Image (tube, rainbow, N blue to C red; front, side):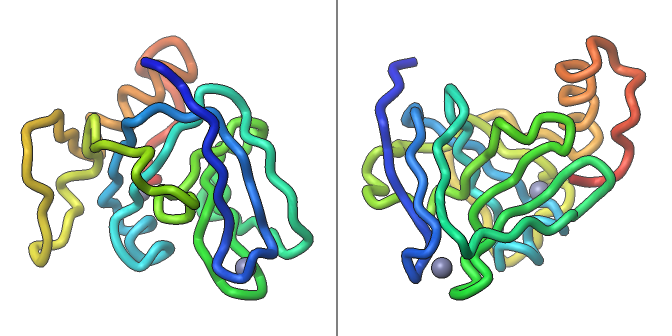
Amino acid sequence: MTATTAKGGCLCGGVRYSAEVTAQMSVCHCDVCRRWAGGPMMAVHPTSPAAVEGDTLTWFRSSDWAERGFCNRCGASMFYRLVEDRENIIIAAGGFDDPAVFKGFNREIFIDEKPEFYAFTGDRPRLTGAEALAEFTAEYYGDSTGSLEQSA
Ligand SMILES: [Zn+2]
Ligand SMILES: [Zn+2]
């Protein structure tokens, strides 16, 4: 898929970023994302490490294996990264300057934790938390017997 450069930032402008992105994003419905983002996490996965700058960026350790980045001035929820791979951050889609860059979702994960009060239309893979974690573990550890057991 073709990648384009997209820029974005938090509400107050304290944090800015630039990333190579495709038109597709994923959606996570897990309980942690819901509390952190105030809704489902619509996640952009840059094709190479994003450039991030800003003194107001703060990281919160949300699980044994992941951290979430937010602005400590305006409170914007922006980034997700694995502690074993801090260079590659996943970026919340809403913060990009031009949302028209993104055309849709390629998949939804943690569908079993999605609240009843919303749903996205359209056909795409919808993985349960267990299915998603099994896939991530396989990608990350090269097999399906790794250590990711809780929700993201
Ligand atoms: Zn801010
Ligand atoms: Zn999640």
